[in-house]
Image (cartoon, rainbow, N blue to C red; front, side, top):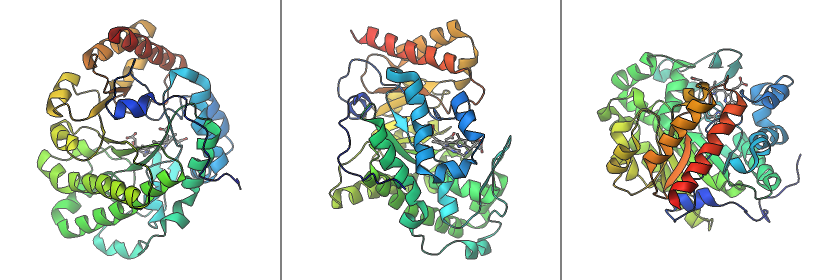
Length: 367
Ligand code: 1CP
């Protein structure tokens, strides 16, 4: 095992994303990509040949190597890194088995069917013991990054994780998970609360280990109606940010900027901007001007080019990326990204064109 400690980290040389999150005036938009370490990179495929997905997550040296791949490849074109892991490590820590099936994605062989299945969940999860491997990966990576860019830690938001735990994998309708909300509202809240408590502990641990920013992925937010989002998603998203901030403060740890990405939940932008997150991440269906208005200029915005635009050829990418940068305008509180994760069959050179365009155009319009 590594002997790296969560102290004496190398000095940060590029803090653009931290400054953008705090609303400071900066010379260009920082840019990073959700799922930037992943299947579209040949170097990822190469390493993945010899190791299973969760073996990589659980081996700090391998998770670190994958986190660094896009940073090494794209150099100064990326302004942040994100620790290689998955949102489903929390359900695993709670006692559910998760397999990563080639061509299919994550599969739970025994998902939760009714609240009686709670008996299969671990009562008091020891987060350090179950997920300490993520902390070790973060500490190691923070050292190996050598201050090139800040490192994100992350979690899946409670509703999204609950949905996976009941559906047992990806789903088009979330019919099983949503039927819990109508059939078992009390038990649904109990499950969401259990996940929230672990999420808070896990995020604080990630910061203690060296994470410099945090992102919460509510990937299935948009499957909820605006009313149900207020009941089953928002309260837990808010608890997470407030409790993480309180805990960091009481442990004497420095506050880190927090980002919320609730995919599909355009209707909740005002609520999300009043939820103790510094950054609200937008999917590609949201017009940046609409988002600025809905968030009353209270937060930095992240996003939001359609990930499939990376299939359009270099000229189209330049054109669409340029339009996106202009749509966010000169306001310093923009962190460029895609509107969701990069797709596995994208040409890595196409991503390079996107990153270059964003950096050049955003610097030009701020002159
Ligand atoms: O580079 C990075 O972004 C870091 C690593 C990372 C992150 C942040 C991975 C690696 N997964 C995630 C988050 C994640 N995982 C989300 C939230 C973001 C999003 O909405 O895309 C979700 C929903 C998952 C669940 C998951 N894990 C899926 C989606 C399945 C579905 O229901 O559509 C898949 C395919 C995975 C596997 C996975 N996670 C990460 C990678 C590189 C892979 C592919 C694994 C492989 O087959 O090699």
